[in-house]
Image 1 (cartoon, rainbow, N blue to C red):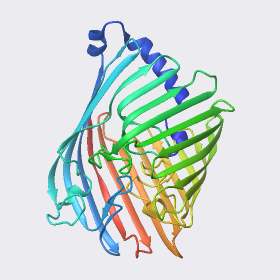
Image 2 (image 1 turned 180 degrees about the horizontal axis):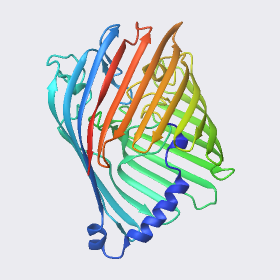
Image 3 (image 1 turned 45 degrees about the vertical axis):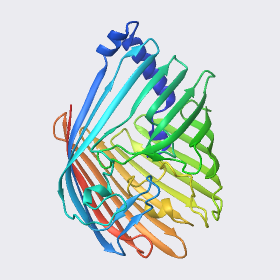
Length: 403
């Protein structure tokens, strides 16, 4: 997923304006009584088969790219519940929980950095239950503030963060935003982690400030931003997005560049450049191609400390481009949505290090059996060089019941 696929703040303003008009109450009891409750139950399984290379705990000190890469398999049940109140004047609150119970493990003596049974390679919260996205939110028409455990729409984040996020669009066409985060983790149907300090070297954590300007409304935008994590890195970047629609045909492209001054000893400065383009028909089908390049010595360094949205692979995939130096990724993607059936296929080839290459194939589909029952299937396969990152095939998915 790239930035243009995230909810645009202008659309969010419209939605929140409508929401506050429809569900804004002068009485706090009414705001609580008229809140929205949602949840789901997922019976989920994961199977991983090593092809070549040695099983290993990959980047155990970074939750954003951590995985156990080796033979494993498990089944579990996962339940998620959430409640969001109506607005009391300009404020509302939201809370969610997730819990999992293991049904089957292929091994009980797996040597992972997060436990010794297969499910603990992905589900390693200290408890079987955890707080998911939960926050207090303020909205007055121009300014939106969230504080708590939040999901931040950003090209360099795919984890939950404990902190705050402020956005303002008082000036026409100009969005100014900032966030601060102290800790991070994941609560999802495929992974439930503990929450760890983002910055083990400084209590400050990490901060961001950015501005996005709509040159041609939503058809051409430019963004500039900066990140600061004391004693880890300071980064600066820009992103340009353009799109055009003619009847049912949509096309567009995106360019991003980020440079990181790495503060840790023996870490060279890093950068990442990404370029992509797409063409599609309605929401039925879309074709996309892109390229990502990272620095020769440090890859993209610590820029992706909280994850990323620029790589085309599964969040748990794309290890070569995300973690290795001198990365060059060329990829293509096709995705389709037809009523309650969606699928996407991605294939990419990443050269890295010194004359090494690892390719990756991702397939995902979701089929709606009814309005509330869905089948999920994800398939990942990596091949070619396995001396640094082992190659494997991973299949996961299950049945999701929404309520």
